[in-house]
Length: 210
Image (cartoon, rainbow, N blue to C red; front, side, top):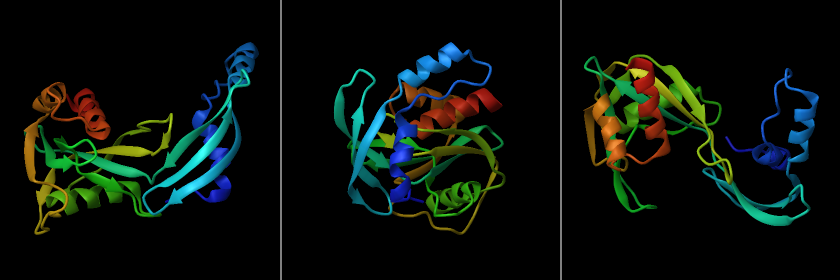
């Protein structure tokens, strides 16, 4: 789940560096990209637990300027867009204390160790809502804030779900509701949905299933 300490510096370089151009790109462009790569001078661990690894990284820019930046690494997360036959989306209403707001979100959570990502996404849906997805299809993988955070997130699509005897986790949701997919997009505009995974999942689902 977490990066090994010995791999931290090399992966920090990958975080700050632009993507390498494809092989069909000119050599001149490749040289320009290499010149803009930031240099990692060192990394110091600040704190670490099962949910986050926080460190400070000393960086040198191509123009010679140096500075220290906080970098956080978190485990992979998996969320699911669950749609029923009426094209309604399964959402949870919950309070997020960090921003002190009540918001609507997709069910989802951390992938446990070597757990299959799709299986983790389905597990989180049932634990948090009591509904069991009938199928799992990968929609998108993204990084929410690559300037300071390494936190891979994956969104899946399930078309159909069955209600189980699982009692939803009392710590997760105040309310669970099926919302028309089009209405979910309007909820984003109204600021009722603000989390990146849910925003991305809603728009990706709209472009995929209409």
